[in-house]
Length: 156
Image (cartoon, rainbow, N blue to C red; front, top):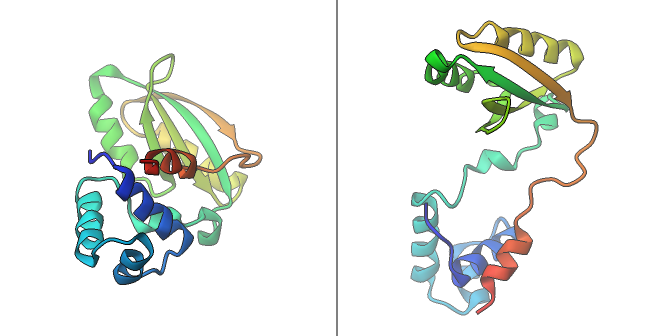
C-alpha cells in the first residue's frame, strides 16, 4: 500500500474541493509541476491509495437505500470458498474479516426489508456460512470521512 505524504494529501484535498479539476489546474493551485501531479496521481492509484470512482456513489441512487450490517460465522474448513462466494453477491458492498464471535462483518444494501430478507436468506445458502446476525442501519450519523486525516498529513 502506498503511503501518502504531504503533497499527496494536498492533491487529494484539492480533488475533494474540485473533483473535475485537471492535472494542470491542480499543479497551478498547488504550485508544483504538472508532471509531478500526474506522477503522484498515477503512483497513488497504482499503489492502492486511490479507490474506484464508483465508491463515491450513494447506493440509494442505485435503488438500494437500505443499509444493513451482517455478522457472519464461517465453517473454518470452507472459509476461503465462502468468502469467494460472498464477494460475488452484488448487494455485499463491503466485507471485513473480524475478531470475536463472527468471522466477517458485511455491509449489505437493499431496496427494502423484503429485498434484505431475500439477500440474507441467499447468504445463508452459501456453503461454509454457518450463521448470520443482521443489524439494520437506521441512519448514517457519520459517513466515511478522511479530510481530517488528510489535513493532518498535508501539514509540513
